[in-house]
Length: 306
Image 1 (tube, rainbow, N blue to C red):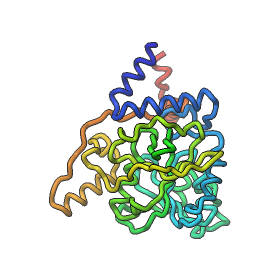
Image 2 (image 1 turned 30 degrees about the vertical axis):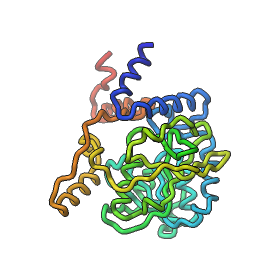
Image 3 (image 1 turned 60 degrees about the horizontal axis):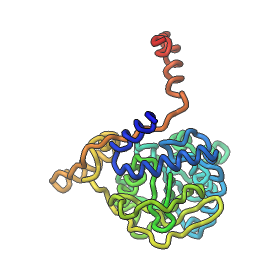
Image 4 (image 1 turned 90 degrees about the horizontal axis):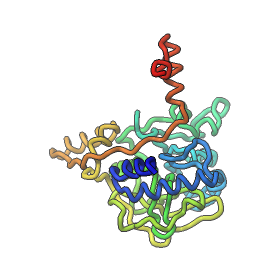
C-alpha cells in the first residue's frame, strides 16, 4: 500500500537499508505478538520486551559479570534491570548520557552514596544517573571490564547485531577503545534480548567496519555463547562519521579537535547522511507543546490549526 511504499522509500535513503528491513520486521513482530513492553510502540527504539527481568538475572549469573568491577550498560529501558543488578551487586555502573546529547558518561557505585537517601532503583534511570552519578570527562582514566548493549536483532552464529539505527553503541565503543578505557581485543560484549530477537539472516559480510558484534546473547530462556564471532573494531572511523552525526555530539567534536591539534593534521570526514527517524512518544510532544502554551498564556498549536 501507499504507506508501506512511503516507508520503504524513506528507509532506502538511510545507510545500510538491509538493516532497516530486519529492524522493521522485528519491531512489527514484537508488537503483533504483544511481546513488546513500555515504551511503545517499540519502533525506532531498543525494544523493551516481556522477560527483560529474567534475561537480566541470567546475565548477572555469568562468571564474566561476577568477575567484572566496572560494567558499561546502555541507558535503554530493557536494560534497566541489568543496571539495577550491576548496582545491587556492588559494582560500578558506567552509562552514557542518552544519545550523548549533553555530556559523555556517568559512573555510579552504591558504596559511595548514602543508603538512607538513595536506593538502587533511584539510580537506574537517566534522571537518576543525572542526579546521583558522577560525570566522566573525555580524558578521565578508568577501565571497563564488561559491556552490555541493547539490540533490535542479533545473530547467534556471528554475534552481528542490529540496534535502533543511530550508531551510538558503536560510537561509545570507539571512543572508549580510542581513549584506552577498554581493550577492544579482550572486552566482552553481552546483549539481553527476547528469544524472538535472535535471528539468522544478518549478513555478517555486509556489516560496516565500525559495527560491534556481541560475544554472549542472553534471553529470558537461555544463554548463547557466539561460536564464530566476527572481529571487533577499535577506535573511531572518522571516514564514516557524517557531518550530521558529528554536529550532534559535542564530545566527538572535542575529541576530533584534540587529535587534530596534537597531530597537526585534519582528520577525514564521512559522507553526508540522512539521519534515521526518532521514536514516537505517544503524543508527549504534543502534550508538552500544549502545556507550555497554557503556561505562557498562548493558544495551543492544535487550536490554531482547527
